[in-house]
Image 1 (cartoon, helix red, strand yellow):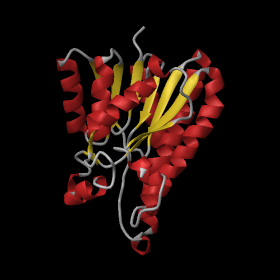
Image 2: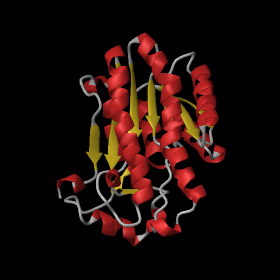
Image 3: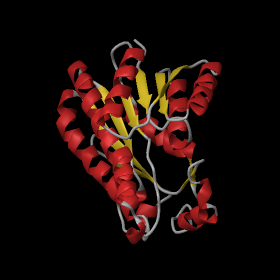
Length: 244
């Protein structure tokens, strides 16, 4: 039976690279994102390469939108989702004093609430079947303090704790829950950082930003049977920033 993977934030960057790579491994990929034009382009690219994919438009900002995405993905997957990759996220940077209530809520809605209710909707089905994998995409700034990145880092730190909690909750039923923690990564979303991305990356041993594909390779590893004994792990994919 063909396995189905749901990847959020899959119309660009790390999410797109993950969707494309999982498709080459024979999985049916459900590409979720807000931009239908980009989503259709990802799907057409996967299909042209011989893979299987569908696009679902999703604006992940509350419980209802997460549950709606889960329901549509399950329909496309024939009643099952075998892999969930929570890659969608927003990462505004700036001073704490300049943060509005609306901005604060938006970050936690997308980065915490949406993954929470997607797992709530899909992990129990995986547990009933006795197998499944969830991978959350966090960030290196969930692990240390960085000026202007407190809101983003705090939201992803919450996802780190949820990763471990879900591993404890669903692991005994055969569902593996893990996370990757990327460092500075060159994507469409980080292009606006300009030289700032290179400066941030310069502090790590690798001395350069990563690529979306490099992060995707680690995500796909965690979803695979090669990681069958890996539960509750947060895998740094940060060019060695964790070491310094």
